[in-house]
Image (cartoon, rainbow, N blue to C red; front, side, top):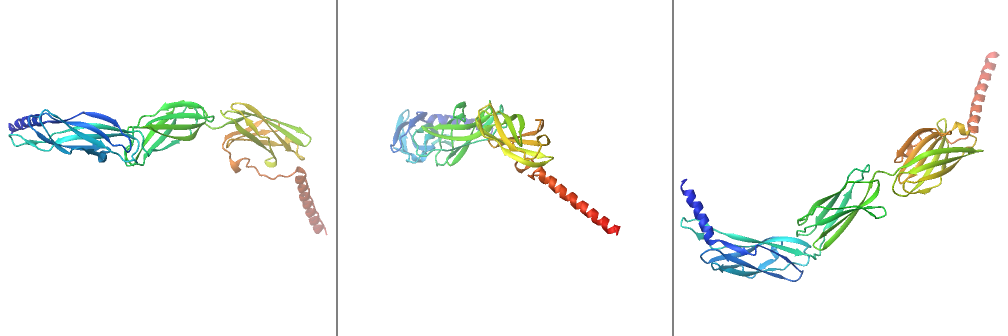
Length: 389
């Protein structure tokens, strides 16, 4: 039995050489026009010594739209036998590059002396370009905020193909724009060679050298003459306005509070403040400042006037709250300007100034205390008179 295998392998080799069938050209590319059938000529090659019968076939993308002038025909030895391939695609096919295969295989089987048969096939690669498809890819991009500058920002681009045909290759570019639509950064995305029928895939972009601010990530893709774009807003870091100083002065029963602020954000933003005054933990007054437009990395002054009523300025503490772009900076100071607490970040809502909020004058407090003392004394004298009799 071991002596038979070399004879079988040798027989197969001689048989395939004797009846080998080929196809030319090995590769071919064409650009189609919707509504206009495209015809290409291929050649079946018989490298054997005898006439053979072959059958042509199509496989791969768009194979259902490929027909042949002759499906089955005979090829003489040493002859290049031409046959015509016609491509006629429908109007709703998507734009893109498609890969098909045109091949021929031998219908009649050659039989060797050992009784073994062989069927030989050959195949050519056909690339079809459609630059003007009527259906485009669905494109979307998502971006996440970055907590601080210098950290990379990542972008996820989704490509959806709603058609029953493959689309590709897809080339893309990612642009980073500032709030004034000035280009900050650009990068070329990795090419997606193919998006399958009724399928989706993803491209990934990155901006490495981030800086503080609000930005727009804009992605542009192109494929076979078509283009699409999508964008997403994102932020690096967070807006910050620092309180540099708080100056409180008194003029009669009014206090003027001057708040010097510094922007640490690369965009202009409106800034305003609220001042709250406390007497031993009790809220006794509030005032709102003017609003200013603070330019990038610049300084400004906010001013508020607070009615002191009968309070002595030296007995009060102050909460200064500065508001900007959905954030706030809070500083608690004494009348002499000593900083007690400092906070910067999102508004704290009702938690800001959690002290009690009884807004009363000191004269009212004194009157209440006098009434209470009078009631105590009256009760004492009544007891003294009752037991003295």
